[in-house]
Length: 482
Image (cartoon, rainbow, N blue to C red; front, side):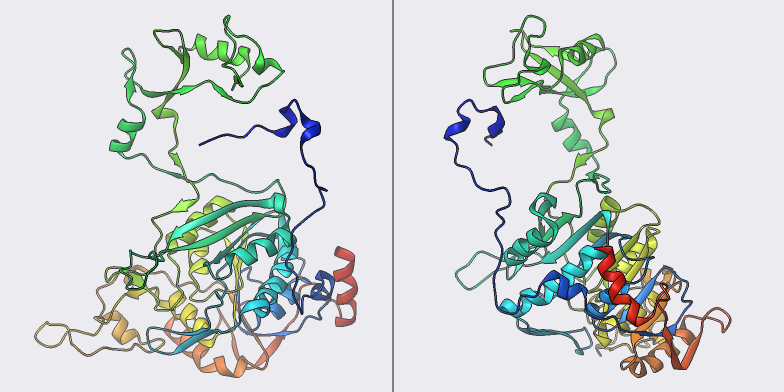
């Protein structure tokens, strides 16, 4: 692969075409609102239905635009979110159902309506994100390229980090004349150049280690590989000077200063070829692993009968979310998913000792998340019915109710090891709250919570933002922060 030379090192700079640094491609369409008008929207109150309002973890049932607007006025959240991951609708013009054939959510927006829908939420998410925070947006080929331009506008092109390609499923045997569609994409941006980052690595297998580190030191027995000590580009500083009577190859420079190269030589870490070409020895036992690149092949979604899922139609692989959480946040940090679906990010975040906020406007999604919190996941497929008297599995396809512990207890499943997630506050738009009373009563009963631990009121109390400011003051405060 060719490596470009920075234009600052070219001799004929005056012949280069130039463009204004402020020039930024953008999408123009009818209905595109200004950032200010989005941020000036009035917040709404939410009913606190369950849990302790002092909990850092929150699950919201309602429009995520209204939730995000309200969170702008919460000093514990505004500018404090370390990591955002969202898996929004993909503009597929479809309605998706759960494993029980219940409508989970509609994905009917398209074109400029879809772009503005997501853009408004990205503007709000930018304000909630910490200065050293990161955001990952999961999309497919329908709108990923449009939203890349939108995210360049909102977060700045300089804060774009990766376009991650994920293998989402097994190969497809298409009958139509196209290549198999087995990938989707994750756009990774940060708010600034100074962001939390723990480089993920994959562990060495014996076979790969032997192939990559193919040499062994006779005295120590340490395995190593040989790497060049020069890099493309001419430099006029120390790395462009002679070392041991040699200059870098034409058009290149030393990767290290002559002083640093002398230190390597003193430690026996320079290999000299028979024709006098120096290379650095890099040892296997000093490597943490193989740095993860931007093509992810090992995090497919539900694809066989030997895994456990919730059955929500857009459920993502929990190991995918674990990689993102561990790479871009620290223990105790706040993470947010405002299209939380089956609650995968929230569940994984709890296990990794992160605080979390989840939002969804689908009743099926909220019920799936609560079920996951209470009972974990279940084996995929239609074979989850109880065995009959002869020990054989029933051919009847059992659709499990929301909290059917009788059926659940009969499953030979890793879910039996699940520890219920109960340390969160549940909030809802007031008009939607009545839909949740029966669900929450089942939740409380089947998770074994005591009256002293949690509360559930027939008439929900309004959730008061921790700013404790009057509605008339909120608009002023939002402006003063920008």
